[in-house]
Image: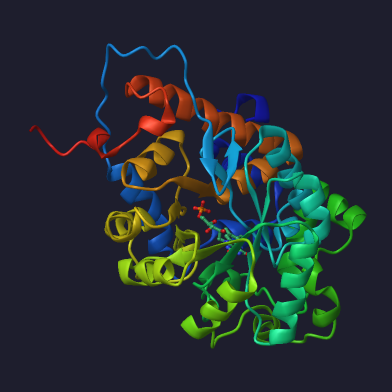
Length: 380
Ligand code: FNR
């Protein structure tokens, strides 16, 4: 299989799996515990059927979507992914440039492998900044000041990591901080010379925004505490709302009451997300959480959705259930892992093509007209 012959995101995943050492592939591909939530995300999306409607002029598809005061060329963007350069060297910058080229948002993870300033520049006005509140408030303040100075206007604050996800694959792969070479990883590196050489050339991936702070970290727990506060509560969110002058979007909600509270606190949006099945194995498929949340807040704030999107039709499913906009994490990661910037571009065009074709098939060429009447609920 080559990039040019990759027909779908799953094909890109297959290519990426071949090119990337196992520990690095699993780090991105894996989910929490037995990965039931990861699977449920995709299964629940697929279980949702859409009814085609015909004899509608489908000759002029339209994907353009406005959100947070800016018009994008498609109703989806790139979700924040920390440490992605472990997956493929230079991945962050490739995705930022991809977003600029196609005019879609690129969410810059606080834990990215590249500095938020460089990524803002590469995304060329399409960058949204994603914050993890640090246990050290001075660290959080510093990041917010930098994000503001770099020109970010939209801030996503991710709240679904009060404790680190337990990922069985990473444990089996003996991933540790600082990174240690085990006999198995050495064999793994030898079997993937292209990745190993590219990584050598590029330098060891780190978490760029915190590089100085993490230099002396000797355990995962230390890194986690620097990156993410375990005691982050609604009171902190209220203060953040006061402090951040731009749009504030809370990422990682699965319950309608939490979403309603965000609306009451003056947030501009929420992301219905379960972190791509990486946190709570017992949780619902993210799409299963969407209808109740949409019912609670749709008229008050913007609703974004992620977790499990692998097809253009998944974006339509999410919109039909009330999402204004969607984010894709692994779909773009697989693209960049399969073939760098070319692979990332392939991921984009696959999703865009599937989305456009599906809209035509469903009799809703203009994405803005997708609504709940497309959902198949049995014969009326
Ligand atoms: C993530 N995600 C994530 N989210 C976030 O807010 N900050 C982050 O740094 C990261 N890091 C991260 C790393 C990796 C390897 C993955 C796969 C995911 C979650 C991400 O933004 C998004 O919610 C999910 O990826 C969406 O699910 P899909 O599209 O991957 O199924």
